[in-house]
Image (tube, one colour):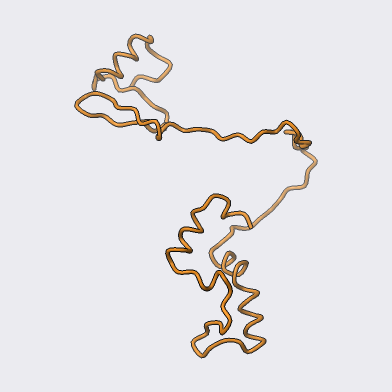
Length: 132
């Protein structure tokens, strides 16, 4: 096993073009940014990670967190907690007002309750959907 800091640039270039199976290069858990076809490595630009960093010019927050800051202890956010946060209040209000059908569905469904399975999946995969 040859660790990444070992070997000259010429050796590493030769390993990329025609790898020697006797001396594999240890990648430290980093995934390849392409695939191999007929012994040649093809780089896929979409597989190269890109960091999206916000502009913090006018930000008043400082990067330091004091050791005196109180510890935040938070339990795991489960599927039940998510269900309660999104639908819980509406279900309780409908139950108290008697606005439930015999099968337990709402007589006056909200916009979230009217979504189809495909629409709900699409909404869940949109960026910013985890912020509510």
